[in-house]
Length: 248
Image: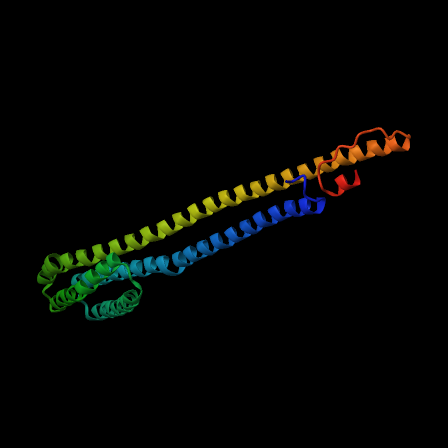
């Protein structure tokens, strides 16, 4: 079939194959990059943001606990007011963080952990306030006992749920990063394979065309020389239908 094609059609076939494969490479690259872009965007604008928010939430809880212990240790009025102000500010920030997370968390496990934090935050704050009040009134012993027996268990629940939330979001972020890496590696392999196929196809078609042209042109030159020498007895074997076969 290839022998019956004209030279123009053979060249068109060769270029057509390489163009089609090149277009396939470009299309696959565009689709792959779009997927990588979506994954990277989710990683940067969603998962890592949540990790940061949850980490800030945990840090604020820890700071609140530290400020409360400071009040139990030192109940000088000016110092107490300064620490209370810090606690109030951090509680307000936590409220904002929790409100934001409440709108953005979707996964069932994430919602479950969020609910644990939200449900225990109120009792935790209330117990901490009672301990602070006892310390301010001068009953440091009772305040210390309240911190250990009531505040700490609630604090542990809140901290663990917050830590688990951070771990969950980090795990999802790590998976997104690994998926992006795998997609990029696989995409590079596919595009390398397609590029190799394009090269092989181009070289194969070019080789066939060149061999065909060289053979028939060589035969035409030999016959022309024989005719020029007055020898008309040379047989002409031409079975194809291209321009050179017509010339022969």
